[in-house]
Image 1 (cartoon, rainbow, N blue to C red):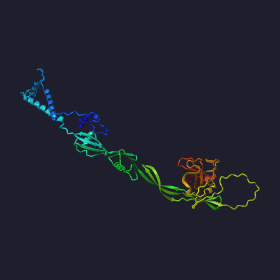
Image 2: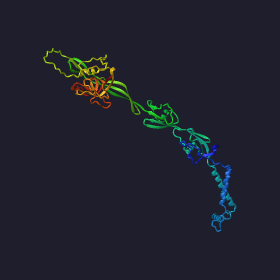
Image 3: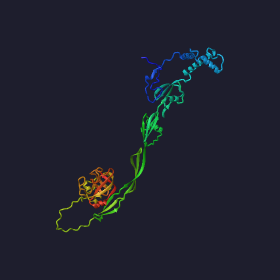
Length: 478
């Protein structure tokens, strides 16, 4: 197969990219966009000029060729020249056909027309076209142009230099034969900063340089993904997360404890308030971390006790008067006796040096004693505490004639709670009440985050004395 030479082709004027040197759409120029060039005349410049002169002479000859018309015709050449002489006031045969001035004028006019035709069609008045090569981001295109500067060449061919692009020569540089114009195209990047998106174009560089180019200030604690020293790539998305830290202070209530002491000077069963309880105040310094305005975490930095709580001390009488010797009774003892709901036997507890309980009480120990004995049991040591919990609302209830939700009869130490929050069988220590076990539900079903307890007591008067307590810290045992 015979290959065609490069010079044997020219761009088809009807091709789909005709007149466009560059377009952002990278279309492939196929062989159908080219047509073979017409073979140039072998006569050269002077041969073409002679041909043009010959054609011009033939045209003039036809123009002035004498026509055979009747003598009576109104518009004859003789009549034309006679009229012209009368108007110009010329006498003689100066412009008559066949005179010497007539032929000189005709020859001069024809020669002038030939010279004008040669100048206009030869392209002498147009600037010479030169060949340049455009390397646009690795895509190389050659073109012929007669423009004077690189900028004019770009304007004519629709080549745009966008922000971030690098042109190795100035747009004011004159066009020269064989010149290579190199364009380095920048890469598009997207920077996401909070709720804002910024478009940036860069030739090359790191993420930190891209942020600087977009005029985005990043604090040292802010998070940037990818990391700041990563190199950018085309189409990369850079995420900037603003990290803000705030410090606040909150006051926490330190609840007082209810303690009881035996007093042998008081009659057994009687009580006396020795010291009134008073809650303390603790100031906590909390550090809050936000990411893009959303709270992520809280951390307690420091704790400072403003005022210590004062424990409430209640004296419990233990004095018993000497019993007189009873006289023999002739009456028969009653065979019926009302069962007691409390266990009169006093259990023994193991405590540490601080007087705190070191073992979790059993179920029988939790349900033993009166209310005063029950709340006088030593507080739990830290070794048997699983966690602490703040109860939003705490009330008391007494006998209802019904069994608990777990099937047992209520007694001292029985606690009603929402089993979804505190499961059945959980052992608790409640300041001012003592140890308890969750065995009932009652009406204590509340929304998540709200905790309520109902404590069993033997009498209605004890329930009324207890009243309603709020925001009480209790201990859940292991």
